[in-house]
Image (tube, rainbow over all chains, first blue to last red; front, top):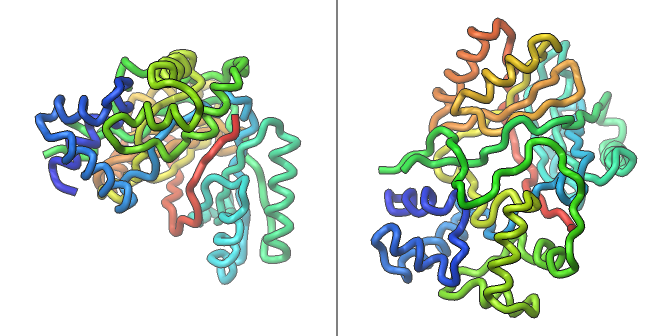
Length: 157
Length: 173
């Protein structure tokens, strides 16, 4: 990443221009050539700096109202292998190992599930529980009852 | 040189996400196909809307108009690249607080006012406020959490990721 890449990120982090030639519009805004803009965007995709390009739905608007953070207390010696397996489940969008805060918080594996009802979210959690088996000592689901702020990534100009 | 920095107001040319759950809107078949087809894979080329529109059997102007309308309706929160902040040297840390009901609104307002706080959700648990601190260095994130603790008088529990197994969110419309 050099300063031109950062300028490109800053120029499109709020969204691509909704014009027929969006990369040309960015190029014009930044005083670059369109070919260079497109080549750098491709390179950032290949490097994983850009995960993907497309539409980002508001999951509440699509009816995904049961957004559950499932959390699991998994034996430390098994959490890496089991985390990989949970991450492969099609309905799990994010899966992380994180520290416990005992006694308030005994859970070390976090897996987000998105469903259109709490019944469906619970069914997904049950599948995760089946996969974890006896390595999991306890679990919980935390539903988001309100989105209070969501700004996403922001880069200073 | 540009740096990863504090969140700021979204570009006003794109709609802001609704913070409260809206009614599920009635989406046309075209809108559903668009959302299902392009949560990734939008092309990098001179006329990407034209290329994308062809795969949906639409014309370029119609696709641009539909994306614009879905953004304005709040069905889409964004249209464009999704970045991996950590690949740019940035840091994201999840954190949680246990906030008494009587203080909840005031503390939310204060936490949201910190520019390093990117996402903030109310969740149903003793730890009822979950947010993400994002900045260009771990020290800046830590300073924001420490400031929230000192002003609120409440502990901020840090949940840095020790390992990431999977991150991909594709929703079916």
